[in-house]
Image 1 (cartoon, helix red, strand yellow):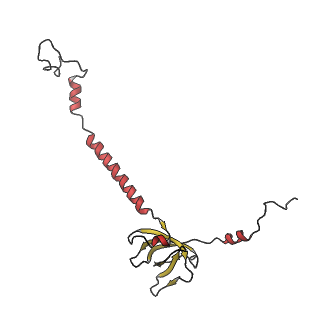
Image 2 (cartoon, one colour):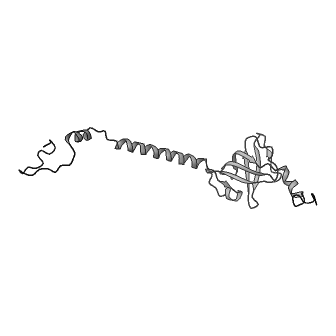
Image 3 (cartoon, helix red, strand yellow):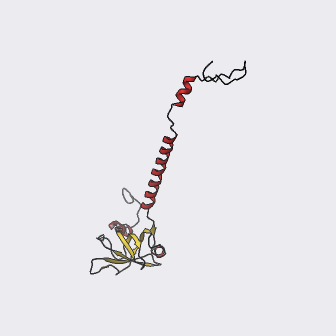
Length: 170
């Protein structure tokens, strides 16, 4: 009878059931390192990395707002303001700060930008500015992008609509 089975049956003639585990196997289990804390630490690390990735992604996502929507935005909220440059609104002040207005047809937002403006930024140009609204209602832009008007748009609109290949070989 093994050491494990001794003392399990106090009555004579009653033996402990054979579990198929000998004393050496039980001894190995007692000295086996517990991996549960390591697993918990690994899960915690994966969770922390997932949270950091999600947080960084949310900070990098900026929504486009129209001037009408921008007037209702929070002062601390970063977003992109998209609209058309109002005619005759582009000017630089004495400090070299660029001022212009963007409109969506319903509302107009003044924009202030301290930087190099794109060459294609002009009256009526489509522009996107990234930044925040100031408490005074001026959009403080960190960057300004202007859509380049394609030189082919006007040519395409003026070209007569013909069936390709018409008049050839007929």
